[in-house]
Each structure stands twice: as structure tokens, then as C-alpha cells.
Length: 268
Image 1: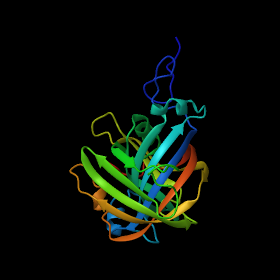
Image 2: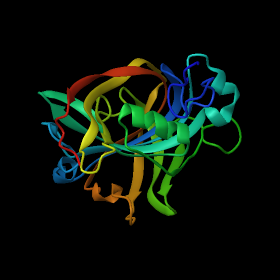
Image 3: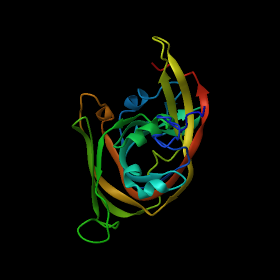
Image 4: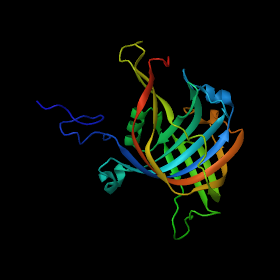
């Protein structure tokens, strides 16, 4: 009798119902990044062992909005846009592991189920949300990617607005910020099916782009607000000091990572 197929649930005889295909995964997207400083203690409370605060600028945070088109190696999802287009907003901090600096996503919201499934595999703590961004366009009233252009971005979850930003492009920049500029250090966690059985999966992993290309990065001025919500904690990363903001169009390929440690986080 033939086995079940599919990279992820649900597995079937053909594998066509699998929520996500096997990597590599290809992404094209527009990114709005707003960096600021918060209380380093608020960052530290989000870092499980063996991760530590970054030695330099430990309270730095990047809040990033992204409007993505993504696909498998075949590219066929691009011609069925409901399977390729999604948006996300995520908060990134930096941390240290064995003397090396990593980026780490500590909060993230997406608006499609396949993006949540990919996050489970990659160690991103993805939740369902509503994410909106102004899109550039060369005609009509939409902003062009040029000095003076203004872009808005909002994030909501469970009917509550969590964040909003307005960025105004200022000038071309040689960087897209520094907080999200390192390999990612994430955990993959899965509780045991047995009550009080601890974690059946407990991996600290490193991931990053298998390949990357990008257009011109633009430095921007930003207005950013965070809001309290009963089931979200983004606002705990309160804004103490702005750092900078950026707009950039990118292309990324993700094709797996490597395990750094297993069974050491003590997460519950």
C-alpha cells in the first residue's frame, strides 16, 4: 500500500493537500523597517537559555512590515496568487550565543495559514494577524520610491490594533538597518503528547538566506506607535529612543538551517 505524501500536514496519497511544499522557498517583497531602543531588560526576558543579550546596543529593536510574494522552486504558486501573496509584521532583537551575535524574531503576525506553517518549521513564533502597507506605484496618487514619499503600515490581531507607522523616505542609504542583519537564532519547540512530559522537540537552530538580492535601500523618518492588547505583548518592547527607518525591495531564498543545540532551553 503506498505511503502518505506531503512535506507538511495534511499528508495524503498524492501530497497535493500539504500546506507547504518542501524548501527551497523563494520570496519577493517590499519591507518597511523601523528601528528603536527599548529597555534591555524587556529584550532579556524574551531570550531563553543559552542565549544572552547582545553586547552592543542590547535594547535595539526592529519592527518590520513585509508585503511578500513567495513560491516553491517550481514557481507555480505565483500564478495562483492566493497561494503566494501574504503580509507579515514582526519584531526582531539581537542576542549573543557563544560570543556570536544573532538576530531573533520575538513576535510575528502573518495573514495566511501557509505562512504560519512555514514559521512552525523555521522557529518563528507566528500568529494570525491583519497587516496593511501602502504600496508604491509609478502612476497615480500612490507614492513612488523616491525622496519625500510617504508610506503607512498597520498591524492588528484579534480585533485590536497593535502598531502603526508612517515613514517618509529621505535619501538612499547603504544599509537597511543593523538589528535584522545577522543569522537568525530561533528555537523549535513542541510539547510532549504526554502530560507533564516536557518538550518532545527542543532545538536551538541557526538559519539565514541561502541567497539574497535587493534594490536600493532608502533611509526614512518614522512615526511609530505601539498599543496595548489583552493577548499580545508587543507593547512591552516600549519605544524609548528612535534609531532609524528604511524602505527596501528584496528577493530571498530560504533553504534550511542547522541545529546549534538540543534539549537545553528548559522552556515550558
